[in-house]
View 1: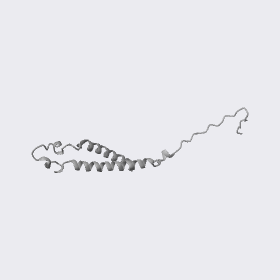
View 2 (view 1 turned 45 degrees about the horizontal axis):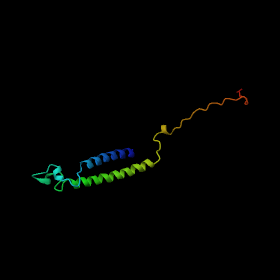
View 3 (view 1 turned 30 degrees about the vertical axis):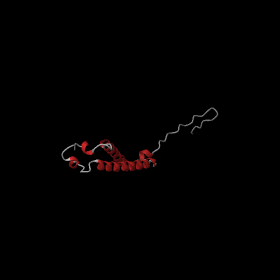
View 4 (view 1 turned 30 degrees about the horizontal axis):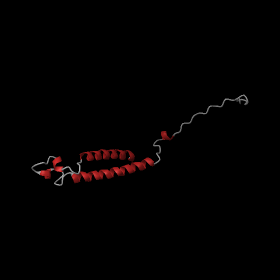
Length: 113
């Protein structure tokens, strides 16, 4: 149960990390120009404040990257554990009936009386 929840959380972190990396700018790009702040109010009117989106996106990316690393380690630890069956059906072994051996010429057949 915990393993399944952790896999879902891991996938959400993966997609969030991919999205954040794709929307980030290169080191030389101006954050104000990217959000349409070329004139007038400048970058102070943006959603992220006067510093721009660089520090917010960088911090969020670092948090998601660390979370991704931790969930990878925990999932790797769970994959090394022995998997025990969850139900009685999985624990039952198939018992096959043994066929009686056919007597050869050297053996005398046993006939019940």
